[in-house]
Image (spheres, rainbow, N blue to C red):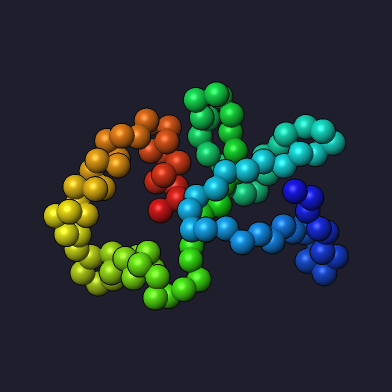
Length: 106
């Protein structure tokens, strides 16, 4: 996807609608894949690659994930037993490298 240079900001910009999630990316500069050292980077993945990443959140304050974030980051965050089990199963299924990426995204 080509980027657009915005003179006012002095930056290359890509605007894309994405569903909520954590996304990894790299830039192609003069035919070479590159990370931007001034943006968030992942640890090396299973293939030995390091990527930049961005966490995308939904704009809708009434979305389930927005409500959950508000509840869990409030004054008295409490997970239900089912939520605790889901978190535990999710974390136990991750490799150490993927766990590091996940922790950067939350």
